[in-house]
Image (cartoon, rainbow, N blue to C red):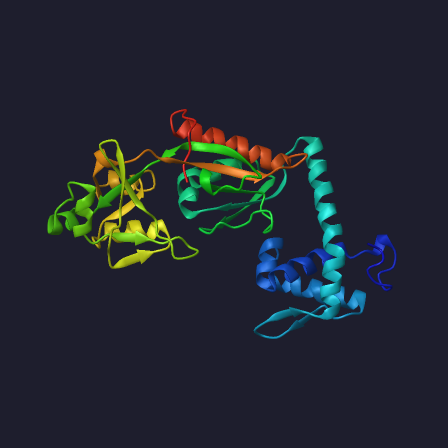
Amino acid sequence: MTAISPNTGTARDLPLTGLLAFEAVANHMNFARAAAELRVTPTAVSRTIKLLEAQLKIRLFNRTTRSVALTEAGAQLLVSISPALEQIRSSIAQAGLASGEPIGLLRINVSTVAYRILLEPHLASFLERYPRINVEVALDNRLTDVVREGFDAGIRFGHAVQRDMIAVLLGSAQRRTVVASPAYIKRHGAPATPEDLLKHDCIRQRFPAGDRLFEWRFKEGRKPVQIDVQGRLMYDEMPSVLDAAINGMGIAYVFEHFASAALAQGKVLPLLEKHRLPGESFYLYYPNRAQMPAKLRAFIDYIQNANKAHSGGGTSGGN
């Protein structure tokens, strides 16, 4: 790394802080987001970049009031230093692993529903238990590649986890249930069979990517059935679907656990209970590594045990 520029001097003079700031800005192409990642102010990042440019005697970014872009020299520098900086991070992580102390930034990619059900109830106690771990949570309803995007782990339904990942079961199976507000049921009546849903205004949910809609699946006796429901409202996330049902705008098909508070408060009522199918399970997944960082091991053990206790000791999960 001493060969970055003839102006950098010896390894003792290497501007590591500036290079880390440069990498963060280059990755985000945004000073504010880079500052948030580094836990400093945008002004501090700007000053650090200016100092680095002065030290290297090259311009690294072209900046306007609306955009940030790498110069040709900046792009070359990024390609050169990224592997070295990653090696430094890996070495530091291994040092933390060797000491047995969970430490560092933990980046988790999780769907909104999985976060609300499995992670949010236990996050505060995890942070209290491990004061030297910083947690970044990305609420993401798309099937993001956690390796490519630099996440330590993700949480998804089992069927959505890539086969080359290591998957750990979380919590109990999540069953979907049909719900509607008392006001809606008073106006339109309650469906007695899954086929009756075709007469109702159903609130549908679309997968974030593509044209596919969530299927409304049930059982008639021992036979599984799928109902192609119709409705005037459609969302790409479950919280909005549930809110619309609470507001009397139609019938929703949501995870029972996710709707538990609204059900307990009588804001929505369960429908078609005898027609529900078994649930699906969520998994925490991560790439196979020769040595797992202590921070990730601590997170997996804590969240898995917390959700086992919360579900009464069960070992099945959901999506």
